Length: 227
Ligand SMILES: *Cc1c(COP(=O)(O)O)cnc(C)c1O
Image 1 (cartoon, rainbow, N blue to C red):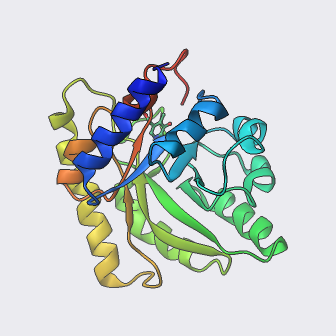
Image 2 (cartoon, protein in one colour):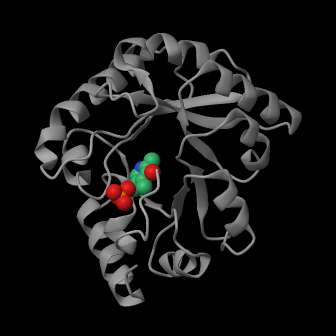
């Protein structure tokens, strides 16, 4: 994990580079609340957690007056009830079973949950997300749930040392994002393309991503890899 000075330098550099073209989400899995709150001191306004249990454990210690919290990891339906009133967006919706549970829990609390449809852009078996060819039909179905607000698409592209290799994937998901927007499948609040992580965010933004999720590029290497 990086020192505070390194964390500050990373955030300042990233915010400068992004220059308002894309929103910075700090991916905070394995990062203790004290350092997450320090990131808020440095200008971070949005964080993303991956695991319901970890979010619950950290929740009370987070500076929620300054930090918006999104859920970005794979979400089991039976955990939805624990996080539904703690996050302001779920990036990782990739099944109707999960969508139906979010609908049920959101309705119970009288709220409408903003969600992104997760796309498995490279058809990787180990990853969640719906295939690109099925995204449009999936988004139409999500749009029919009264307590979900479909805001856009999210993807986790293949890990690579050569970010340019992911350009093709970012271009493909951007095209789909635009197609859906233009067809007004759901025209209420469509507008977020969440793609790009520490290794490839610059490529993602060049291809149209407007929200990047950055973990190690802010906080340093994680003690153990977590997905
Ligand atoms: C961990 C994680 C990130 C950030 O990954 P880094 O490579 O550390 O920037 C982004 N999105 C998701 C879904 C993640 O789990």
